[in-house]
Structures are given as C-alpha cells and as structure tokens.
Length: 182
Image (cartoon, rainbow, N blue to C red; front, side, top):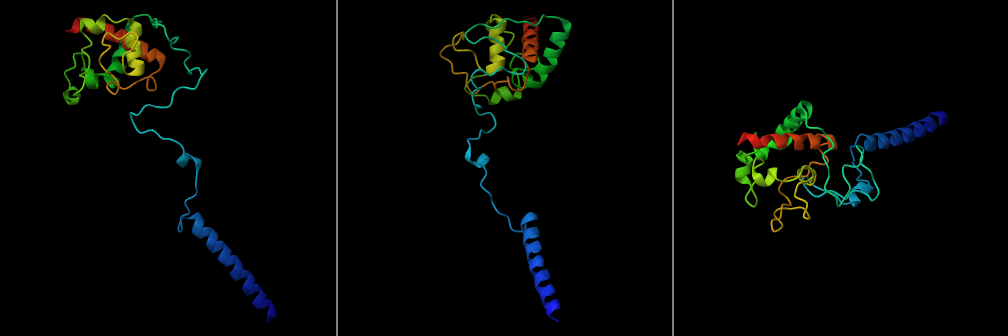
C-alpha cells in the first residue's frame, strides 16, 4: 500500500512536469522572450538601407571607384542589349514605358518629378557611367547632375541590390538603343 502511494506521487509529479512542458512547447501559454532583433533598428520597404560597411567589397567585385565616372566594361552586342531589354521591361518599364518615353499609368501618379524621357537628348547626352549611377543609386550623382536644383531622392528606387553590376551595365546598353525609338 505504501509502495502504491509513492508510485502515485511520483507519476503525479512526472505528469505535472510533462503537462507543463507540453503547455509551453505547444504555445498554449505563450511566453514573449526578449530577443535582440526587437531592439535593433528596422527599415520598411523603399526606405534607405544601412550604409555599406567600410572596406567591404561586393560579391561581384567593385563596380566603380567612388569619385570617378564609371566606364562601361560590357561591350554593346546583341546578347547584352537583349538581356538589358528584358531586365528593363521588368524593372524600369513600369515608370519609363516600354520605349522610354514616360507614358505609363504609374507616371501619372508621380507628382513631384515625372520619370525621365529616356529617348531625350538630356538623357542620351549623359555618359554611360552617369546612367549606371542613376540605375544603381536611384538618382543622379549630385556632382555629375545636369539638374542640380532638383531633388531626385525618393523617385527612382535604387536597383543596386536587385541587379548585379553586369545586369545594370546591360540596361545601360539597352537604354542607348532607345534613342532611335522616338
């Protein structure tokens, strides 16, 4: 009889421990643990991301040296222009239009600054490096801008995180072909 009482106490204790563990492991009672991710800054969509760490090198290698106008390393051939055309249709045509003439539904809702007409003399007069920087940073480089008094921030999103360096140069090569489509 004494042995049965001891076994009942042991099994009751084990049952309470097992029930407690299962209650918390199956989130019946949820404990909100403090994690460090909740304590750090976060960024919403289309917000400026954190700056690139000092002395870091992108996976694709250095795209250009800061302070200089990048030079197009990709030769203009059918493959580059075709790749650039398909990437342009995915990333750029929604605002600039299929032919780069800014006639789109999205352009009607942009009030501050309309998308640039990519077939215009102003855009076609830019160097390949300036077009590359515009695609990469989402705005003209202030040192090389043809429009110093216009704030381009918040207009064209920077595509340097969406496109590799090669893909951005392919888009530059495609934009050069738009000059004859006016």
